[in-house]
Image 1 (cartoon, rainbow, N blue to C red):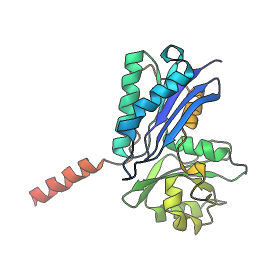
Image 2: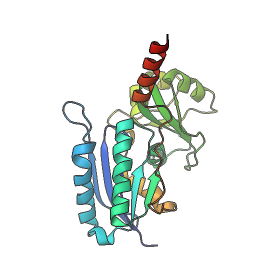
Image 3: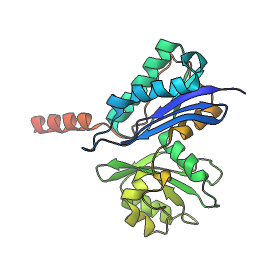
Image 4: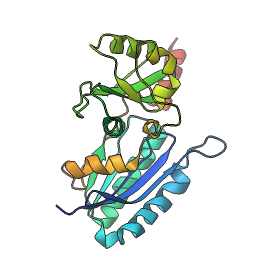
Length: 237
């Protein structure tokens, strides 16, 4: 079935955008953070989306939008989801939400081999977001957040060590590799979210109708909420 869609992800420090038509990538960009390590989501996302739309033949040709729902940074997810919601409503397009870990898992699935695939995103605060997939793509673990040592222990209980990718695999390479996890070199593309995988997953699933909520996958409260709770406890003491 013919399908043209534009997808993007801002769950990590990267701003990833893709235009996809009938299973073929017609535009793709992946922008890392600025020289000051500040993500370019606010400055670059809409510009890159417009470039993707132009490459697809204009808004009249786009049939669906897709957005990564995380887990990831609170600010990045808020920007991505709000942008997808706004574009969907203004353009009258359905929007599909995709788990960002699933996109990394799909990328790992393109690597030859029969081992399980571990998608891991650096969650900061000394934690990691992760999910496990069979070599064929089936999700074996639901998305979770935990310290890298706990993830390493979970991995150690598996029959065989998995292949891992994502920023969390890079940051916590030592802990995971100590349990036999295979991790490609730091520069391998599998460690960064590619919007073409967001598009591929959205193309195989049912679209949202653009009116319902696109719910980010936070897995834990944002820092601001934790700070409020901390301040409230301190005042009550």
